[in-house]
Each structure stands twice: as C-alpha cells, then as structure tokens.
Amino acid sequence: MNIPDTKEPRIIIIGGGFGGMNLIKNLKRTGYQVVLIDKRNFHTFQPLLYQVSTSGLEPESIAYPLRKIIRKQKNMHFRLAEVNRIDTNLQKVRTDIGDLHYDHLIIATGTRTNFFGNKTIEENAIWMKSLPQALNIRSLMFENLEKANRTEDPAQRKELLRFVIAGAGPTGVELSGALAELKSNVLQADYPDMDTSEIEIHLIEGADRVLPPFSKQSSEKAQKFLEDMGVTIHLETFVGNYENNLVTTKGDLSFNTATFIWSAGVTGASIDGFEATSLLPKLNRYKVDVYNRVAGFQNIYAIGDIALMESEEYPKGHPQLAQPAIQQGKNLAKNFKKMLRGEKLNPFKYFDKGSMATIGRNKAVVDMGKIHFGGFFAWFIWMFIHLWFLVGFRNRMVTFFNWTYSYINYDKAARLIVRPFKQNKIIAEED
Image 1: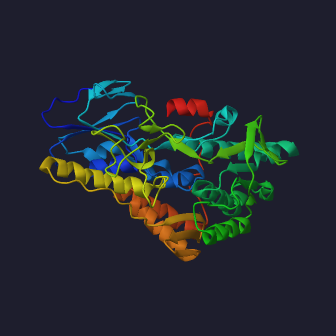
Image 2: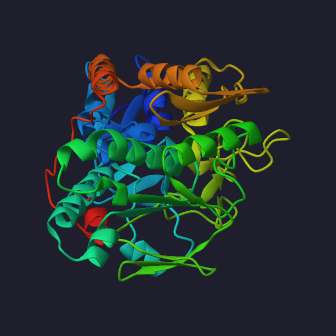
C-alpha cells in the first residue's frame, strides 16, 4: 500500500461515510498515523441521493473528495481499496491492493440494501444506496419516459409510466414525493404530446402507516401530503416478487411496471473475519460497548450504522441515521486523544436531535422529542439542516442555488441521461 513506516500508533478507518469522516476530521494533528480506506474516493451525503435520482441535484452536489479532508495532514493517508477480510490474530486489514497492519481499527462501513433473501427481487429491482445507483434510476426513468412518448401500444405505455416503490420509510416517502413533483411541475412541459396524467406512482408499505419510525401525527401528515400529490399508498402490503416487469404481492395486488424501486430495508455491511460473538448475524451489525469497542476486542471499534450499542434507552441499538454516526465518530476521536494522555475515556451518549422527512415543495414533517409539526416551517427546517450538514462550502452553495432555482421556476435542471441504464449486478460490480 506504500504507507510510510512509523513509530506512531496506526489507526485504520474503513469507510468514509458520516462516522468515518467525522472521526478523521477530529484526529488531525494528533500523535497517530491515520489511514482511511474506502472503495470510493468521495463521501456521499446519502440523505439527498433521492434528489439525484429524480434530477433535482447533480451528483457533484452531494459528493465530497475524501482526500480533500486529509490534505496538508502529514500523519494521514487515503487508499482507494476494497477490504476483503480482517485478520484479527495478526492485526492486519487484507484488501485487493495489499495488506496493512493496524494498532487500532475502526469499522465504519455503514449498511447495504437488504432484500431479505429474495434473490429475484435483488436481481431485478432498482436499488438506491450509492451515487452510481441513483444515477442509474435517473437514466432508467427518463429512458422509460422517452419510450412511453413514442410507443403506440397503450399497455406498454402504462407499464413504462407506472412507478412502484417498495418501502415507505424516509427514502420511499421522499422519493415518491419527488416523483410526484416531477410529474406535476416538469414533465407536462417537457412532453407536451404525452398525457402525463397516465403517470402513476405507487408506494407499498408492510406496516399500517408510512414513516413507521416517526410519530403517528407525522405519519398521518406525510400520508395526506403524498395522497394530495397523487401518490397511491398501499399499507399492510408485502411485496412477494418482481420478475418480467411484474410486481406481485402476498395478497391479490399486482402491478405491471418497468420501474420498481426497492427501499424496504438495509442490513449492515459487515466484513469477514469476526466470530459470531462479535457480529450479530441477523442484523449484520457489530456488538459494541459504550466506548464503541467491538465485543471481544480492545483495539477494534465500530461506529455508525454497522455498530449496535445496547442501552436501556435503546435496547435494539441506535437508529441507523446520520446523527449517531456523526456523534460516535466525534466521541471516539476524543477518546483516542485521551488514550495518548492516559486519561479516562468518555462513554458514548446519544443526543437525539429528532427526525425529519420532506415530501415535496413546502411539505415536510419533523419530530423533535414530544414536538411534532409539518408543512412549510418543517420544510424550511429540513432544508436548512441538510444544507448545514453538507460537506464543503461549494456543495452548500451549489445545492442552495439549485433548490432556489427549482423553487422559483418549478423546475428540475438535471434531467440528463448521461449514460444508459445498467442492470444492478453490473452497477454493484462497478460500485
């Protein structure tokens, strides 16, 4: 890997998501050599992936170069690599470009899409967990619109203009709302010779309400917003299969659609090399203590979505959101500094800053403790918070400009097919 030898303790961080990025930012100018390993050379602001997939933002707006975080830091290094295995006996990370010894190891690999063992859905549905996958959705959506515009077959046109989304969590709700806005405000102007009222958006959820992790009040508001925008919601409905452009459910409901997007769950992106005592197999999350140490190890840590820290307040672990990852990364950085000084470590305590989801223009819901509200004010807060947490001044400015332009002109500027749609298996290999 061409990492310089050093007498300083070496910290290896696997993953440049919210957890890994905030950890490395807070380890600058310390007595450690820090090595960040990721299979991409950029950090992705995942909460806004759906806006890339629906042409609201360009991918560069939500991506930030990882090397830019560590530049001018002589003790920090980045390597573009795929981690294959952790050798806990030899304390080595084994990657596709070589092996590297660690003194301290932090796993911050986040999650991957969970298909709950359904291989057919995995092969045929559209995923949205990375930037290439979001661009893939954008390409497919506009390719299908072009096909629908030229076909003379009513059945084929209906199939091409029907969008079905599985999972009414924040991703599914925000994606459905963005598609509804695209239909109402943009497509009629772009396709004047096509009846855009034929476009259907269906949201399928197994629970009895949308946004199940949110308060009941927010769920009800979100559902009303979506229905007013023309989204058809199917609650207490479970997808059974998707093959040959046919979505079947475990009931009588079925849909012929050329666009089926799966956002129904995630699982931890674990790495080989750990015993079952450390890794909870059903969840693929590492069991950690209050210092984020992986069970059974003193020098291996896990933070963010991949970590499960049980507590009285969170018996099933912290929610798999950006905030726990950000806070754990910052806390662990403080503890590494305390280790050098021989001081007592700080146990992690999660501060819940609330949950929010946007449904479209002037429409969002926010839960902050016992306070729940929705509408324009919630949407304004959502916009401000997301701009604040975007990494980099340029990203904030470009995103703000795009949102302002879209708000004033009822337009989405990034309606581009920059590459043809590819099947998920090819995207996953490239990704």
